[in-house]
Length: 116
Image (cartoon, rainbow, N blue to C red):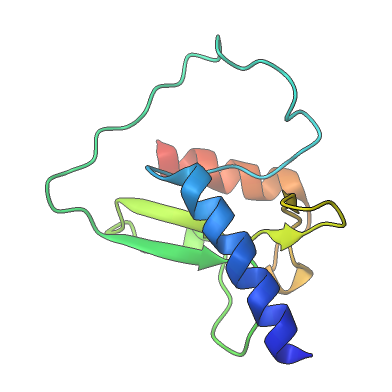
């Protein structure tokens, strides 16, 4: 059972990493179908020598942390991992309560703070 969950998370992670390819993604699928092209955001320049890492959305025994706890030395933080849904090829992202976030807005606020 643990191996199956790991495999699902790994597949979900691959999809998320492919989608995130150059930066930090935000949570929330409620507004996913809205067009945000006029939001005024652009891709950040990646330094020649970037420090990158994954922020995991689950407790696997490693220390869990909020994005605000990630050292500022990281240039790219890949938010991972999505969960498989009942639809083939589809993934969803829901915050695991073990990460310490009380709600999705707190998570989004931490993303904006890291992007600043």
